[in-house]
Structures are given as structure tokens and as C-alpha cells.
Length: 200
Image (cartoon, rainbow, N blue to C red; front, side, top):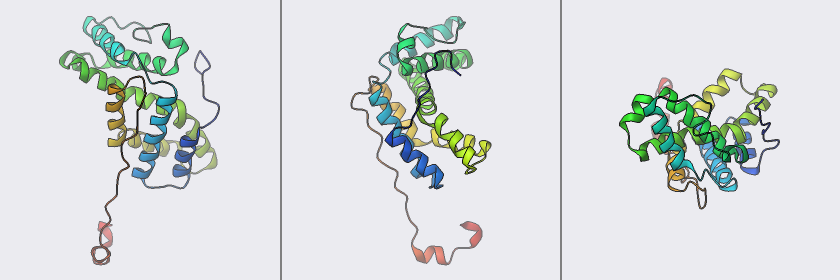
């Protein structure tokens, strides 16, 4: 349990849709769309991470000076009052400690995007997936390892990457929208009928 006891107690409407998608074993792209929509709504509701660009710059400085010593970068007072800022500062400390050489080679904009991807994943777990996972595991819908793999695949999707880019452009979350839903292309029935079963 986190030291500040800030665990969400309930799921909001968009996260309930994610739960339904997972419970019903909907296709991965549909579930990724639902997660992206829920994340965008959540980030708007919590007012984003206003200090994201500054945290990313500080992350690069700490990595360059090899001075990572705490669990947060830069360990501001805002992190105690604002969960997304706390998630961002913890993610920045992790990136600074594990990706020093990469951070030395990238621009501040690229560093901010690297951080935003970690932040979006952290917020997905904090506000939804960490609540949904135990419910699905307790119901026997998924094994724990299966859930971990599924969550990793969802958070590695193009939809989530696009949302992270949009967060960099709108760190306060104001006007942040999920990318358009992915459209699955359907094969013509004639192609499917003559296709070997092993190719399906």
C-alpha cells in the first residue's frame, strides 16, 4: 500500500467500460480503445500533469549528473497534493536511473515524450487497471500472468502512444482527447471461406 494511502475506491464510467471489455474478452484493439478513452477522460478530470515539461528537464539533468538518489525527481511539494504529479516524479526517477545514456542523446521534447509514456501507463494502473485486475482474477476470468501480459500489450498500443504525445502537447489535460478509434479492416467472406484454417 502506498505511504500516502491514495488508492481509488471506485471505477468511473469509462473504466467500467474497460472492465466490461476485459470481462467479455473483447478484441485487444477494442479494449485498447476503451483504455485510451478512459485515460483521456481521467487525465482531463485530474488536470493532467502541468509540470510535465519541467519534470522531464529535471529528469535529464539528474541523469546527466548521475545524482538519482530518491524515489522522485524533483521531489516537489506538488507531488504530495496531486497524484498525477506524484506518478510523473516517480516515473522520472525511474527513467533517470535506468536510461541515463538514452537521455543524454535525446532532445528535451523526446525526453518529455519518454516520460509521458511512462506517466500514461502509471496513471492507467493507478486509476483503473490496478482495481480491475484483482476483480478479474478473483472471478477466474483471467490468470494473473495473462492479465499482466494483456495490460502490457494494451499499454504498448499505438493508441496509448498517441495519447502520450497529446499529453506532451497539453500537459494540463485541458482539451485532451483520445485518438480516433482504431478501425478493424474486415476480410471479404470469399477470402475467409477459401483460407486454410491454420492461417486464421
